Image (tube, rainbow, N blue to C red; front, side, top):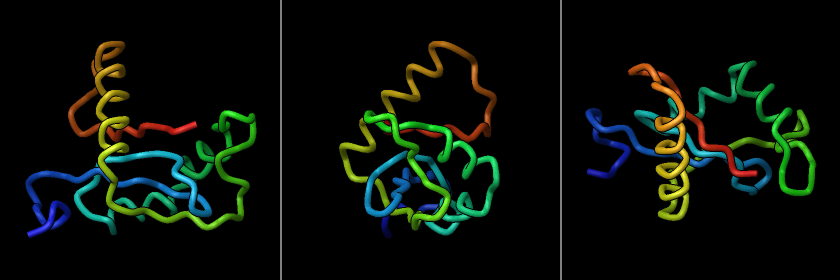
Length: 101
């Protein structure tokens, strides 16, 4: 059984725009993570967030894909989640996205 096959523990997936890692999100499956591509609020966030050079993470047309996160992305996701929890009290079931500028 792979990490993504375990229904009791979500896995972390990396969102990629034209091959560039832009975010990480926890989801029950790759299919569930991929559903974010159909969410207007997610696409708006991608278009509004900037990379380190000041360019939008998504230009409105580039291909978006999701893959099981590599160890470095798991670390970045967990660090960002800890910081977010320290600042606020997320509700159980809230979707957390770690953005990679």
